[in-house]
Image 1 (tube, helix red, strand yellow):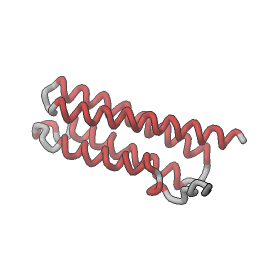
Image 2 (image 1 turned 90 degrees about the horizontal axis):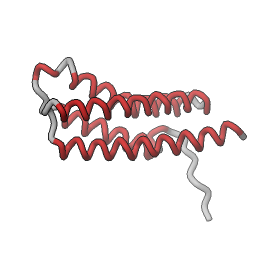
Image 3 (image 1 turned 30 degrees about the vertical axis):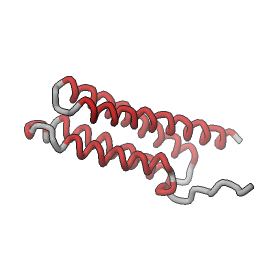
Length: 127
């Protein structure tokens, strides 16, 4: 049996790839928001969405497990922020509920993936 491929770059991480895809979907969703939200909810949602893969990338690039764990925590916080903003945008009638349901499912998947990554990094740090 082959040994698992060692991750040498953040782009190799499936969680980073999925976070990039989520950010693109948030940009597409917010493109239809009202113009007066350009500097409000649209900007906040886009920043939170971009923060997720950015924190994963920065954490992995630091090459220290403790630092990576800290950046994974930041990414998780950004996902919670984005989830809240999506729920608010639907309540305000800015986005289609079907779009938000898809995004919320993807956020849940990323939260589980980050939790798994956090666990495995925690185990590696304790050895």
